[in-house]
Amino acid sequence: MKVARGRSGSPSGRDLGKVSGEPVSAHMMLDQILDAGNVRIASAVFQPGSRTWWHTHSEGQIFLIEHGRGAVGSRDDLQILQAGDVVYTPAGEEHWHGAAPDSMFVYTVISLGSTDFMDEEVDQVAYAAAWQ
Image 1 (cartoon, rainbow, N blue to C red):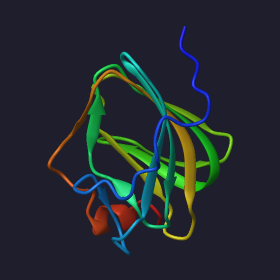
Image 2: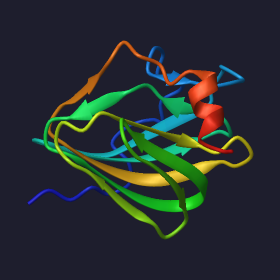
Image 3: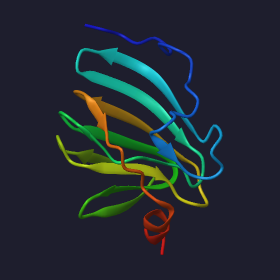
């Protein structure tokens, strides 16, 4: 059994190369809560307009949306999310997630297995289309 009391580290700043948006400084914070084997739990705070790059998880990912409005998109689906929503992305599904242009986006994320970021940004045109 492993119990996380408080946090296991300091919140990160922007994760260079994996998060996009304007303004580019300090628009995503990731606070690692627990790292145990193939399970990582973190609290994520995205500033309005920020989003991850395309990526996958070898065993899937679960989001528990706590505050604000955001989205998670796959190659063939896009879901607008708000507080109270729960999302599961299956193993190997290419996806991105981030805040709405006009709202912060706060959630707890449970990542299973490894995370593999692609060299592909969710560009501003595709991101803006999600909110029309």
